Figure (cartoon, rainbow, N blue to C red):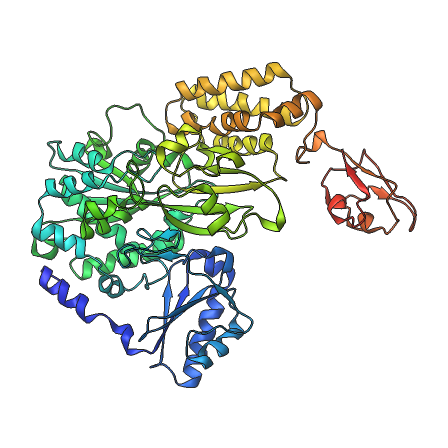
Length: 612
């Protein structure tokens, strides 16, 4: 039991157990790594070390996600004495023998070496690397199921500082001074939100962590909870002290079993050591945290809908005011912040507001975590200072577009965001600049598209997601988005005209102005941004009845030209047997049977198939 700050400091000083081993092997065991086959790699490393009797030489540590989704399974080999390290990607179980035999962080035959593109602002004053890790400070570096590893890396130091030397108001003032804005999408100043709840005269208050991550292609919160759960527990406890709350709730989607497991372990360990529960660190402050599971409803990312779900009601939003900071869970003052917002708090308290404000931009200090996905060469989890350009992320960290294709657009902010084209790649990412371009920061999803994507169809795809996830409470979202989807379908099917385009834009603006919550208010963003940035594609669909990307099947046809040599590869690959012809003779496509899949087009080596 740690019942004082002195005991916490003593424990932290005694927990650097890694120095006993010559080499540490960090194994990325997040959900993405496990899915890619890291478990057999981990087993092979352990078996090899045991077989060679090198348990004292090698310390194999299971960590959370390193962010290198493009190179999973990933490991990092560190020489303890020198601190030198090498990151390996695409590791196979048979590579374990080479890793153990070398006994050092040197390149291994047959295994890709991966550039370490990040640095840690708390450890390094300057770096030429793009990524600066605050939120992901411990992800990929510690075992998230061992509280001693978190404590040995400055864990709970911020909580000790708060409970032994700061008043509630001083904590709030520090967060306000840092300029930290909510990382869940809205960007509201975190300290100001806390101050509203702190000012309420109520014996019962609540802290809620919104871990209901639902954006397509987004996995930032999952990675933090899997790789560094104690950072969120510590932050929620600090926030509870600041506003006068004794109870915290983590609302997490049930589809995150590994994150749930590691949170449960972290809560049990923190309670066992007295870092959660009664009389934390002998301060007299009590705080407990429990988990509540969501059923995967995207609308429950909206704070009032989330609160209703916790209360056992339907996850539907309500009008504001009153805001949750005044009347939230069980009608008591409640603060709702997302995972990434909380993960910034311990570092700010440890290092001070001035340190945090030196990172990022004046109006958007700090870093932002993005899930980089789509048609980019190196997908993964990145954390960059605010003000980093889209180009640096996509073409620097992401290494550009796959298969030599041309960049077309990037979607920021998930289904609520907008699509930006190539002339916006120099945009410096912060809350205000993205909104000015018709997009938004959102929670951090970033999906890259190439020349093979149809932007009209992309807008339809995101609207379909919104339709599925709408709670249906308000008419603009329930009915209006359905009408938008019908118009987009007509455009993709070649059944629309200029009147349709005008109605599409007018209704989109109406829904933005009248929908009840953020889901409905932002649902037209993909439409409005693609209409503004890719007007030529909409006009081609309407005027020429043509989809240049070859995605809208009702607007394309495939025909075999006179370059055909009768090799039959197209016929052999056709899934519906609509291609006929004798070998070494020009073949023919039956247009009535053709499903416009394009397999023949991509299979032909002689460019003998035209897409019209």
